[in-house]
Length: 324
Image (cartoon, rainbow, N blue to C red; front, side, top):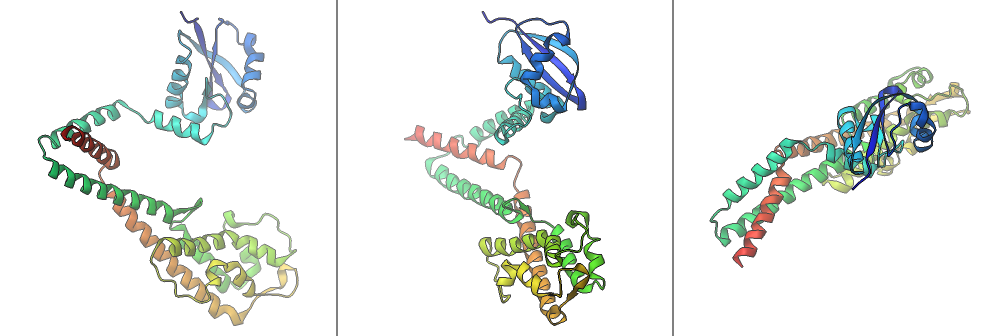
């Protein structure tokens, strides 16, 4: 017979909770402070202990994780630690597993039961020829669905770089380089996400490049995504300006010294630089239209389409086995 386990529900600062299991009953928090600090040092260093809120008597060790997950479901994964999930930072795999488990509901079970009952009824008394055609059709639909999802992900999130309508704001920031009379003031009054925090006037070119590095990265990514994953014809020349726009950016300015006050626009390059911005704008709109198309296609599929279609294919395979 398993030994009795006491699970202590401990309230921490910052609205966090710690679930700590012991085989001995403890009446005072002070009697296990040292133990808690040794076991959960990192988590308690930023979420100090306040009080014991409750204690639960368990009879199986695996019940500890059950209650940890139950509390995570109610309070949030980041707000609860204990059992197998006691580290300050959970791994990506742990978070994925927890999120998947905590998303499960009674409705999920009922839906699965209903899906399978309907599938059994749907293919009742169907001959082999019908089932073969149905399977081919289902595989084609599943392939199309997975392809649309994969393409949507590739076009809208390339190596962690999010591509959405914020790209149009970036185009406008590039246009500011041509329209703004006081370039120096414009540079130091940009949106906070692009603002350099070192407001000295040393190394003007480096300062400019820093301001626009994120925009260049996204523009380069737009070009890369369209080139690699679509049939869009890229007609702009020289293409080097598309995959290394920061190089042409340097040509756009005359740098008389390393002082920011001395930066001036190279007027000879304004027309070509504007041409580059216009082409990037065309590429951005082209990409956004592609993303919209795939988002629409994916949205037209029924809820749980992938799951239901997979169930159908597996059931047809089962029927084939019985026929043979």
